[in-house]
Amino acid sequence: MFKINTISGIAMGGAFVAAVVAVLTFQRPPVDVIATGDPGVGMELLYNPPAVTKALGINQAPPALPAIDVGPPAGKAYKNVQVLTNVSVGAFTRLMVSMTQWVAPQQGCTYCHVAGNFASDAKYTKVVARRMLQMTIAVNTTYANHVGDVGVTCYTCHRGMNNPSQIWFSGNPPGAAAGLTQQGLDKDLPAPAINGSSLPSDPYTPYLLNNQPIRVSGSTALPNGNRASLENTEWTYALMMTYAQGLGVSCEFCHNSRAFNEWDQSTPQRVTAFYAEAMLRDLNSNYMVPLTPEFPAALRGPQGDVAKINCATCHQGVYKPLFGAKMAVLFPPLLGKGTAPPAPAPAAQ
Image (cartoon, rainbow, N blue to C red; front, side, top):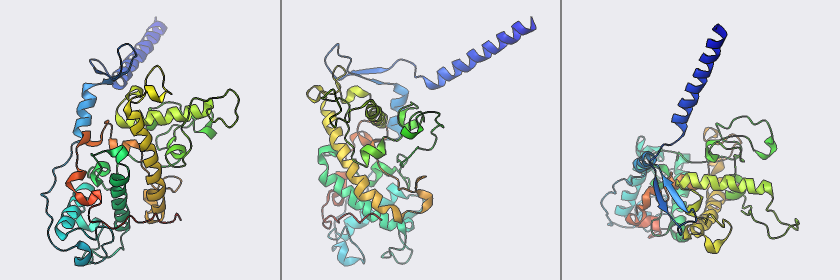
């Protein structure tokens, strides 16, 4: 009798644990269903109301300071102005105050500037901020095919934090479990970026940094240079999973569920995503990586690399950053007005 009761108790305990796990990991109905394709093709986006409420909470654009455009060019009024040279002192000051609110509300101006000598480049944060300002302008002026008329500001990524919450480093990300098999392929290392799956845990490095072709479907049966292997398919699917999580959508947001590889049956968002991939490679290779020597070791990844950008950095779980709030147009210098010509990317060290 004792053994039976013990076994029953263990079974009941196991059932209780399973129930708790189910409650904590699965989203319960009702869900909102939005059709994105013709009836019967299964092209639907599913939204859980609590998840939408959470996304709304972290994707609100802050109020903008009143516009002001008076005074001489900042490059003549102040020392060591290298980017916003022809921006008026009024617009320059407004943008600097706004950047402080977006990136360092706790520390204030001295997060980047030396007190009493704002022209000094002694702090690494000022050197990085200058390059990030150039990067923001480049996104708004060069990649309109992705950002459209929404654009980006420092707040798009930072959200009031010194370092954006959604960044990535090369190699196995923190929190990845120790894999038992295929460690050379970075598989079986469940990580949040790939939704805890056994797919490769770092799809960013080959695709969003090293410009490896993103391809699943081959056109020939024999290799003949065809890279669409099962291994590359798994890496591609891992990357697609990060896209879905970063935007809070499913595959059907870009693809037709009956013909994933067919461009002519895909949604317009697939083209937008295609341009995003080119943009991210550019930003990571030409803006972030060359800044590696500027960052202290404590802010670098396990392999000593600098933090880099992916879809989630801007999107933060929604299909458009800040649900499409047009912040950039409120700050003309971020659209390139009155700024110096784009500086070439510094050589990597």
